Image 1 (cartoon, helix red, strand yellow):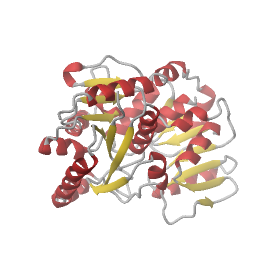
Image 2: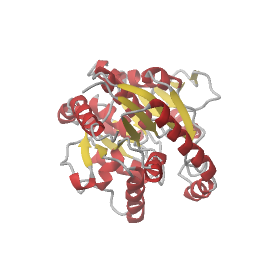
Image 3: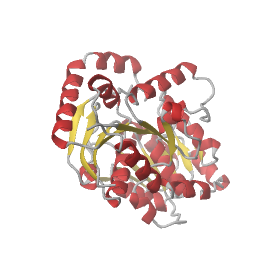
Image 4: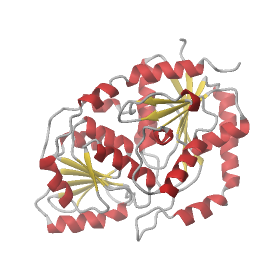
Length: 369
């Protein structure tokens, strides 16, 4: 097929969707296709990482979208504040729709790839462009009968499934990223796909373990919990990545505790050499750590149902433990028991490039001229 022009629409909350976009952009370039532009939603106060546009090799524009608010005391998503705030932002959302319409007219993409940004689903519903869209996200596994949800959480389960359906509105394919294969669901336009992981992962050394723990903090306010554990256990070396814009690039709290500003390649390089990882239950970081056979301590954001679901996946596969705090004693206890075999996951991920190119080219052929 002749080279495609591909428009990315990427949810900017967190880092997982950005990672997926970078991975897919590399796959497309190797197959002779081009990402003509990326539209990244801007809902919260997290800045877009500098490395994103550089690694994407395409122009990036940010547009307003919904925002999640975090309660600083409970460290959980404040759903009341989130819903109230977003209900007063429809004028901003309308501007985002107008920007998307203009981009379609100027860039002439052959296909749109929506990395789980709800604006894209509502845009397709409202504007009904002739350009086909593919929706990408591990959340589409929520709609698959083989997916195992955590016990209870019935209201959250219904809410998550509803939000996932809304995000995938208008999509010709809903690519459900998964740590394991499962049958497609043609009636729901769902196809199960391997995780989208960065090229750098496959160039890292394997079976290297140095005596330090790697920690990712969703919000820099959580650092006080890390410091508290460190003061009780000062002999353990900790490298902690946070989103503290006021901090130096690297902050040495002590001889054995170092804080780093978020940096994609540095985090991945340190992951390959660490003894164990503490992180939220973000899908991409989990998949990368499992590929590298690194013991995982998952600390999902409180009341974040999606992360609890990811945590269940990781623990069911024997690759992780899930906790509700940052007490690293649990990781220390887990490491000697860790025996996860990554062979099946590695084989599944090895099929990714061929599968994504095939599906995207197939959907692009549906474009209405």
